[in-house]
Image (tube, rainbow, N blue to C red; front, side):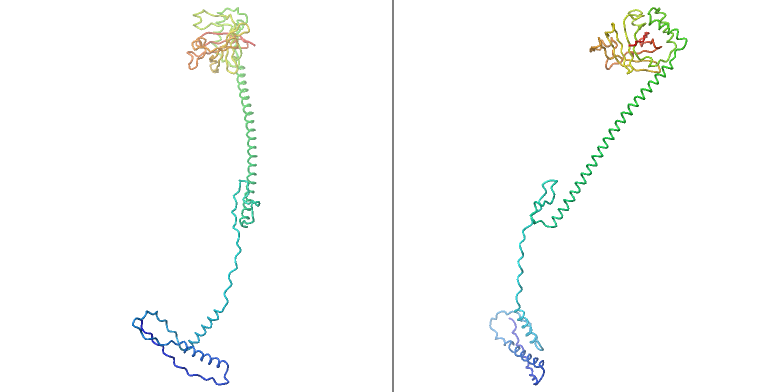
Length: 379
């Protein structure tokens, strides 16, 4: 149970101060206010609490007592007046309705790499100004970048064309230099061969033997033994023979044959048929047997020259009949004819060791041991 509320003590009445007549208006107003305050305090004073009941209801907690005395009643009066004046103030006006803006449409994607980001034809006037300006700036930057790239491509194409022209000029110069080098090498080789040919001089004691050989190729009436002795005399001189003097076509006039041919056929002196040997400048060799101007058979191949030994080594790889037909021969026939067989070496390398040469005759010993005398052929 809550304690009984104690009655508030009644304030002692204050003596009424009489304002003398004729006082100022402020004194009169202060006395009037005090009188009205006293009346209000008496009116709002709480009545005594009723007697307790057997089962009292729970009461809310008592309010804190209002302070009295002094000008407390005047403060309450002033607060009431303020609340009344405030309650009589007009309510603020409601905010004005904002106009409904249409939503911004999204910026469309460009249709292709050359389509600008901002297309005025697709602008409905609802782009954000900042977006439009930004897109215009980007479009201008892209346009300038494309122009710069195009200029760079043109410059690159010009440089490539210039490079190709320079490369073509370089190749032309290389070809010219190569031709000049080849010409210089040929000229040097020719000069060297010419020098060798000029240095090749028969000793005086060899001129008699060489004269016998010249007569033998001319008339074929010199005794074969005398021809053989003349060749042996030149061979003992061991002359250095130049290749330039050997190159050309030579008709076989006299041969002793190899040891095997001498055993099989006897000594062969003057050759009764036309056999022509050709040593070409491109290092090819050809040996043909003719009936009149028609070649019955020709053996063709390559040769190499060994300067320090005056030696010409060769190998025949093809055979030609009647100047038009080159048959495919089996290996045994090639061996018999002295042709080179692929993958096999000769038992004895075919070669000529040259003994002497001049403008009319050529003398050499073959790898088989036989001697040969040729006469120069002009055609």
